[in-house]
Image (cartoon, rainbow, N blue to C red):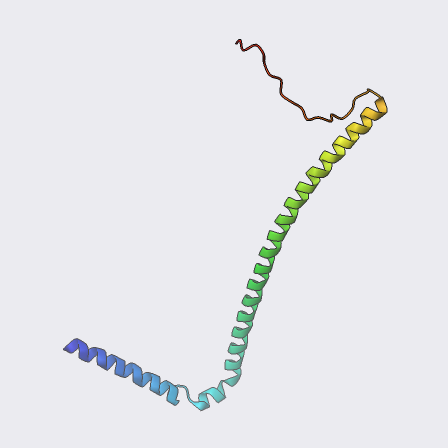
Length: 121
């Protein structure tokens, strides 16, 4: 029973403190008028800090998205570069064969595997 009474007294005191705070007994209008410049400065600095942090988070997200795009472009570049050099290499070999007149030609049929007729091992 004593615990219930202590709990109810605690909530009564908290309720009174909130009522005093909202009613103007703790922070009065005169106190606000007297320290208005300081309060405004604190609010301005706090809002500036929040705005700065928000803009930094937005920039970090934008940078992460750009890094993902950069990775995609790099992989595309490597793929296209490999295709280009493969094509150039084949063309240069073909031109070299034509200039030396070795009598070599590109195969028309695909290569096939030779089968071993002797199954001896």
